[in-house]
Length: 635
Image 1 (cartoon, rainbow, N blue to C red):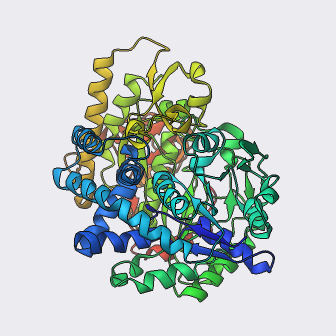
Image 2: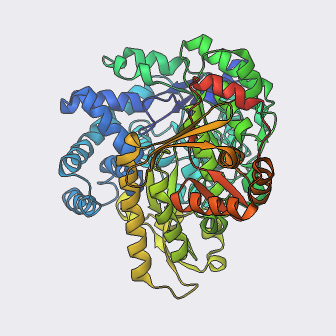
Image 3: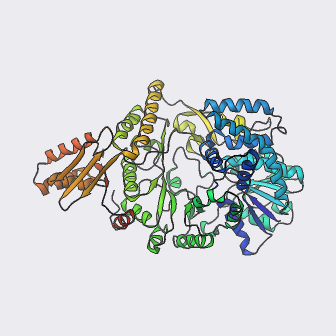
């Protein structure tokens, strides 16, 4: 069958869809019929600007906000629900009024709310016109990738295709179709012919070589509507190295055809994938994480393929910014050492665990990793234990310090309201924040969610929580009478039942933490806490707003003690060594440790201490990275 793979809104404008590009690359082996990738989100971007006479630069901001920031409210899906409203028996006037009230409750600005309503108004016309263009490709089957806010846009376009050409097949895949969610999509939306559960390579290969629907009955991971019933086959787990390098030619062709491509092209980063699943999740899944669904089993390509993959992508498209979609960086054989040795100017991004040391981060920076998303989540070791993060507050702080030294942009989030969170966990973070305003603040402060496939969802009783039902947004996303919202939902409301808490006190502390992080963001650019080494002296510059104490010259025992705790050290060993070298009583050195802790110069945790200042070695970050690559791993 001739297959068109479609990436609907709201994929990032700056990222070609790796999902459809990887599957389209399967056609290069010469087997089966052609596979055509279609970047529908770029078509929607152009359609919206032309239909509503938007300023392109302003609409890019609106698009990004809807796709990235408002996902939790279901905005991107709701906009395209207008194309399904009549068929689902939804009164459009009431739907708009109720959802607008919901957005206002959530604090969405009136101007943005008006824009969202306008976009919903034009969505039916877009889906009808886009369906005609898809049919014009001659494809016999249309496959849609659906992650985050792509489900309802895909359903709307699928409905339009079936209205025009009932004989064509439409199938959906991606995160929104994994396990029970996929069958729920089939039951709620009868015009969907099939869904792919799990990884899509096997299913797409079967489709491209099939001659009719019957050939798909045993395709791996497919739930097929056939002969009046739903027929399901088990998904397969693909070896990571079997995935080809993504085929991005069609994305760049479509992007270059836009009249405003110059607003997007300079910011494009090409996604790539070196591994699937999560090695930490296999060992101890984070309590709140449902990200991998049925694909938790960790598989990684040989590290040597990293440099070759990036070389191939950058040479083909002339874009040197890249973006790893891996859930977690491989512990060993991740290819970064070879990439660093290649001395190319490619930049990239990885999601990482936050317990990496100076050597690992030095290697990452030398390899061109300029942005990371570390799984920090909290600056309380007690809270991190509750979340099963496998790291401590000291690990997280050290990570932020090293990123600051190396010029690596750390994008992280702070979570609270996890089951069994205590007031002490919040209070210790409130005390800490004023001392670390020189480090990168979190992007968001949010309550822990209960997502499908997470331990919280799978075993709520074990964590003292009760599931109430799907999040409120699903009332608006799946408004039809046939929709089983519980089966379709990914995120759920919950209540904590495992213990008695002072709810008012906890709420007050969480609000205070949110406000303090807000102040951290405002003060970050002007905050400075750094040090420089001399031959036998250390100069400390402490200009953190509200807590800084100016310039200090450390000599003798203070110099030795300070240096021993840079990037973390064992307290007893550091105290004993400094005392021995300087001939100072150990109790006096311990007094200095206590004074520095009260001043916020060091963070103490158990038997370890960590200097919170950032080294300013007067070297560029790459030179610093090369230096750190040669150090021991540390803690």
